[in-house]
Amino acid sequence: MQPIQHQMMGYDRAITMFSPDGRLLQVEYAKKTVRLGNTAIGMVCKDGVLLVADKRIVDRLVVPEAIEKIFKIDDHIMATAAGIISDARVLVEQGQLKAQQHRVTYDYPIDVVSIVKNICDIKQICTQSGGLRPFGVSLLIAGVDEGGRKGLFETDPTGIYYQYKASVIGEGETEIEEILHKEYKDTMSIEEGLKLCIKALKRVLNQNFNAERIDAAYIKEEEKVMKKVKKEKLKKLL
Image (cartoon, rainbow, N blue to C red; front, top):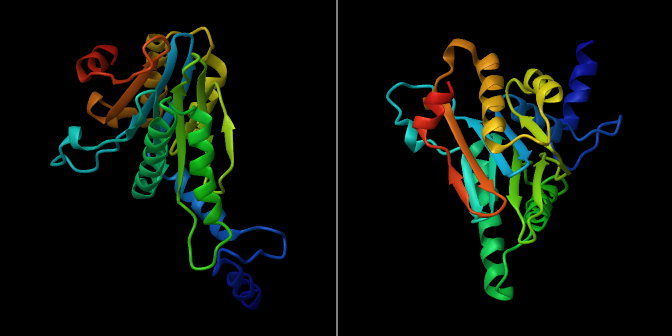
C-alpha cells in the first residue's frame, strides 16, 4: 500500500502536472482551503445587491473595525472572499486598477462581468504556469451596472466563474446553501436579504455569533454606490 501512496504523491508536486485520472491536485487543495475559510454570503435582491461576511475574530484583543472582509472595487462593484484573504487582497487590487483604467480611458464605469473575467484570467494563469501556486481563494463579486443590471458572480481557484441569484462560500457552505435554497426569493428587499443572511450565519456559528463578527455591505439599484451596514443596525437585527 505504501509504494502506491508514494507514487501518487508525485502528482501534487507541480501545478502543471496532471494525475493519471486527469486531476490537477494543487488546484483541488486550493479548493479545500476555500472550504476552511470564513463564511461569505451574496444575494441579488429586488432593489440591489448584498454581501455579508463573517470576520471570524479569533482574539478578543483584535479591534473588530480593523478587520475588512468586504472590499470596494469601484463605487458600483464590491467583493468578499473565503480562503487566504491576502490572496484575495491582491486580486481585488487588480480589479480596482482595471476599474480605474476603464474610467480614465472610456469615461464610463466598467461592467461587473468585465471585472470578474479579468480576475479569473489572473487565477487561470496560476493553474498552468510552472513555479506558481493557485490562488487559494474564492471571491463573491457583486455590483450594479450603469444600465441598472444587477449581478452576483462566484469565482473559484481554477478561474471558473458562475453567475448566481444567491451564493455562499467558506465554512458552513453546505448548511447555508440549504437555507438559501429553501428561503431565498428574488423578490426580497436588501433588508429582508440581510435578515436571512444573519439568520443563516447564526444557525451555523451558534454561540460564537455576535454583531462584531459581521461585515455587511450593499449597493442599491438606483444609487449604484457601495454602503456598509452600520453596527447599530446589525445589533437590532440580532
